[in-house]
Structures are given as C-alpha cells and as structure tokens.
Length: 197
Image (cartoon, rainbow, N blue to C red):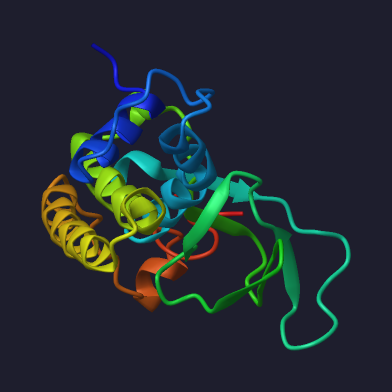
C-alpha cells in the first residue's frame, strides 16, 4: 500500500500514543496539528541532509542584471530549490541571497535539494526521520509533555543518523581534481562537457 501524508502523520501520532486520523481535513486536534506542522517539518527534514531522492541538477541562465557589488554574475535559484548543494565544482565560491545565486562564475550548473511533496517518492529512511521529527514538533500540542517532546527529538536524531548512513552508501561522486592540463585539453573546467556553460 502506497505511503501518504496521512500515513506519515499517523506514524508520528502513534509515536506519541495519540489517536490516529482518517484525513488531514478532520476537525480533530490531531488532524489540525498535523496540518499545522506537516509541510514545514517535511521541508526542514529535506534540508537537514542531502537526500539522494531529493537531488536535482540544473543549468541556470545568467540574469541580465548583475549583483550591485562583490560578485560578477547572478542567477535565479530554481523555484523548487530548498537547499543549494553545489555550484559547478565543489570549490566554486557562491552565495545565495534571497532567490538569487551570486558568483564570479560565468555559466552555472547546480546540484540542489528539491522540495519533494509526493510521499510516494520518499525513501523509507526519510519517512522514519520525518515521522519522528513531526512527532517531536507536535508533542507539546498533542501530549502537553515537554519530556515526551525531548524523547521524540532523540528519536529523530537517531533516525537521521541511520538515514544518513543508509543514504550515503548508495553512491558517491568521483572527485575531479583541478588539473591545468585537463582544463587546457577541455576535459575538465568551465568549457568541459561535464560543467560547460
């Protein structure tokens, strides 16, 4: 059976020993509280780790108007971006200001964490971490117990540790060293087929 927002909320509610919900549109305290916290907590957990299922790559078009000072170029942050992981190569300097990426690099390829809203796309480790964080955030409203909230935070931190271990073992990117000879041959660098503009 497919995972859903309601099922994730019910995992959190079960951790709190609370009544389960049938729908997020229920008028119960549990459903109202889940509605209040779910989206913000989901996005926070997505930002807490570079989840493989939420990774996206994009080539960005340079904006006509450059930054006022400090950098030469600016680009629009992708609309579904929650966290910018990398611009071009790991050593490229950039800063995110509002919805703009500022850099001295002419031609931007980015890797970022996407706002994934469809629970069917979540991996199981993320679901367990999300339900634990949701329980931690809702604990005071649902149970009125600060100690229960602390227990849920500990559960969340443990779930994140396990999730990071599982997620990080699913592959890695090979590090490409900056080599002037490779750059001159067009094998690596700004004009390479990998990161070219």
